[in-house]
Amino acid sequence: MNSTIADLINRRSCRKFKADAVPEDALKEIVLAGQYAPSGKGRQSTRMIVVTNKEMRDRISDDNRKVGGWPEGFDPFYGAPAIIIVLADKSFPTSVYDASLVLGNLMNAAHALGLGSIWIHRAKEEFEMGYYKELLKSLGIDGDFEGVGHCAIGYIDGGVNDAAPRMEDHVAYIK
Image (cartoon, rainbow, N blue to C red; front, top):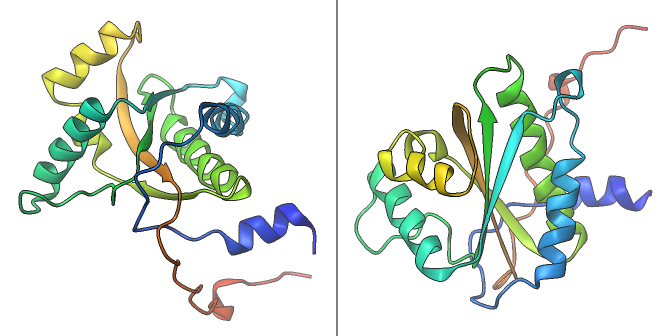
């Protein structure tokens, strides 16, 4: 089987990460894969924020936890030391789709490099908060952006679940 296809088939969401930092060169490769995701009319309407600073990572995790309604102490990023936040430019009609493709590329690239990943929601709610709007300004990200998702990345601590059986009735062929 082709190695790319094998990576796509074998990638799973990771829900337990080691605290070990993800090497910067690996993050750069993962981000590069995200930058090459398809986008509507080739507009590249998304933005990514790579977070490895522990204080900022923990702030985002806690805000995400509050939005999700979980008890204090729960980490919705499962201990992942790196988070890549993907934002969509609201002025582009395909931007949320584009951002979803970016997130898919990020997760598949992480898997190809031997890292675990998981897509975590609630970025939309976070980036409606004043603190995150100011964060975008401080990073020089101008425009009207919405959070689409977080790609939590790190080394897998333990195993990951087997794939659920694929549902055959989810594909129809017209020959």
